[in-house]
Image (cartoon, rainbow, N blue to C red; front, side, top):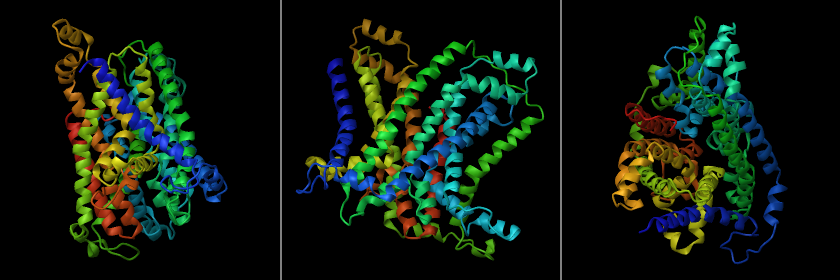
Length: 556
């Protein structure tokens, strides 16, 4: 196969996988009934219904408020956290960073369940607070609580981009400010953070965008008070008319994409500016950590406090709840300890299947996805054609679709295309949905690895008579095998915690842990949910430990 044909095939397959679901969503939104209904006609009836629905208005504005609140909390905290970790001598920086990134890899629905059993109305910490204060000083089931929890759990996203930008800067200006008498706080506010403002703005746009992806947190924390965001409104819209309301769901999907797509392209613009900014300011990579003196322990304590609230509280709550028969006022811990919830897991064949399916989609599916990302990345690697920009934009399109939306779009593709229908409720459809949703992330991982290989070795192979494809196969791929292995580990972590993408594609035999948690929570099976959440956290913990042990950069 020639290189041109290979690139043409890769470009065509990528375009079909990305454009087909999006086109079907837009097509469905302009129909008066589901596309498989013979009575379906073109019209704007679905748009009229949705836009006049008061629940949609409430969900839309609540989503805006939650997303903005998340950004207001996460951006300054994440930027300050990055400054402390990268630019100062705060203790324990080496072992703190993997802990800081934990909220990214733990499923949001697990975190939500953890907060419910920890600080819910009868939660473990709520009971303790009531014993001491006589009342519970917080209300978990409220919009402010949702905003605070979502904001705190998204601090690591801002941290990643801010820390990366700070590491690319020299310390000359900061040292000059310190010599002029500025304290570390003034150095951070007036010197360091302004220099990485494009990266901070990029992270702020990302967090605002992720506010439209929120599903697990608002489903668990908002549903008891009928607080809807767009994703939960979409989830509950499935049978609003008593029959499949695909046309209404398509309108909501179009609205979400109309809001998120400009945000994704704004991110791209900001990222370009950030890189240009760094290249102008970067005079050298030698940096000296700013000495905080006595404040270093204060900073260390502040980081531990954030980790306690964001990581320790929900994970401790869900873990403890999985080992007790009941919890509430007057309950003595030693009297209610049990392992029965873990034994009960084996009584449910669908739970065992869910665990095995989750491992399978992470290990095998993750490897297959990375193989596909590698094929695409190799096709555009060192390709000087303008088509690389087309591929670049194609890869970004799924990023504008939250996981729930992408899963729904893929479901319609499997229903719409006759020869794909047998695959609708199989692990193949779930794997395809996961792979497409995380296409941009996976491509960034693999492309970054390929860029580490200089062109000289490939040119030497071609001079020796090898074709371009053979040079990639025999030279480039072997050289980047460890980078691809690291990419697989990171994709494994993402696939194991993923849940919202597969909700519409699940069927008997294709359950995954995340979707089982959502369905079990709906039945009130808190004991099983707690035990299964711990199993999911253990999977992620093992994956993280292996990645750290192998020296994988968790931020890619």
